[in-house]
Image (cartoon, rainbow, N blue to C red; front, side, top):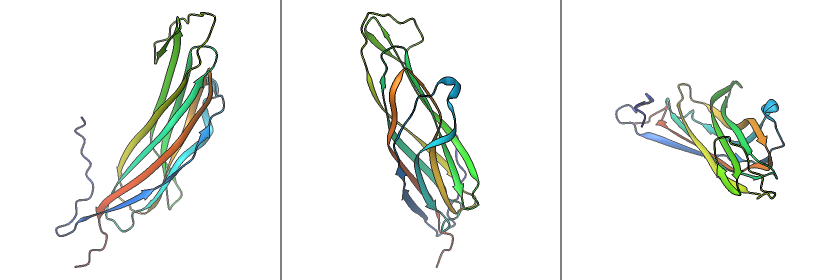
Length: 191
């Protein structure tokens, strides 16, 4: 458990925190093959975005929740692995892009004597003359929280900035969902 405490706005006496909820939209993307040497993406894949306007709040705290499904099938040979790096960026009214954080998804699968070993240490494969194709479906998500010293209208965007696909078929990110929740006292309190 973290002992970090955010020092965001405390409402002045008599003021009550207000809440703004914004639901964004997600897209699906089927990723082409990317080897380790070509994994850094110059044109990232956008998988979800949400806009929230916090101008009516004083120094609000903004929480971003992202979730998705990641699916892929192993190819006919092993080991198979998939590595994706997701990045959350913020673009506000001035147009500047600010990277807020990155999160990694990684799945490594190797077959030993017909047994599937997920997230195993690298070890020699046993070739028994036949292959078992495995379809993997994982949920993936993250939560991010920040204090906004300068409230305004901002877009939060989740992108895939790095993709390594090794011996996998049809890796896809789908069912992307993103929400933004802002909490803080009203900027103009009427008595």
